[in-house]
Image (cartoon, rainbow, N blue to C red; front, side):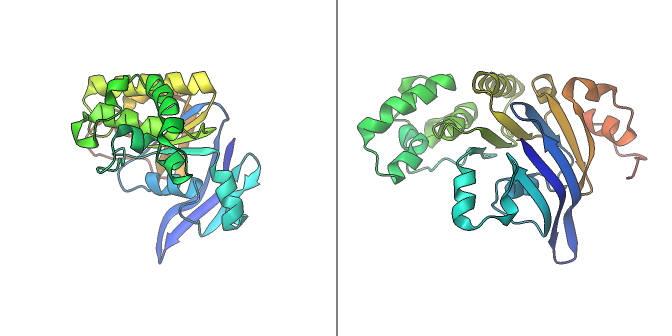
Length: 247
């Protein structure tokens, strides 16, 4: 379980997360939504320890990672996988090298890595034909799947997704969401997804709405369409700006 308590992050006088509280249930998928510039990706980077908060606590399985030294934090981060917004594949490496890069860095041989990479490719519904392709030869959806396979190679207990379907057409977006859902159920991972896509509501267990540095709404994804908050109603339906509720 991920539990965030009174989390605040400031850059000078600018407050990004403002006494934020959020509990992410273990083994479930939680979508975090909100307008651009609200600090969603920054929140994700604080959860994984890439950026230290100004104050507050981030508990991963009851361990506050904000209090850990670098060695202790690295041990905690072995529980995590991180899926980048644009896959973040290395152009100079082919698919198997991109997926197996962590094993390459640890000194494993190609013969050790290839069988594991093939297994992860199957999980993300890609064939072995992609092993020797380079990122420039992949479609957007394929690149996203390779990025996910790279995350899965470490067998994470928690997967953080930073807008995983940005730039994809609606059909491919749906397939990626279905894949994320199936993997989450198959491996009982805890998933946190930064997204602008309301399609994900069909697959997520929970939705958290980030507004002015705080979680303004948290509840079951299937119920958000019935939420009577004017701001959330406006946001999830893509309505033009108008009078909104403040917090």
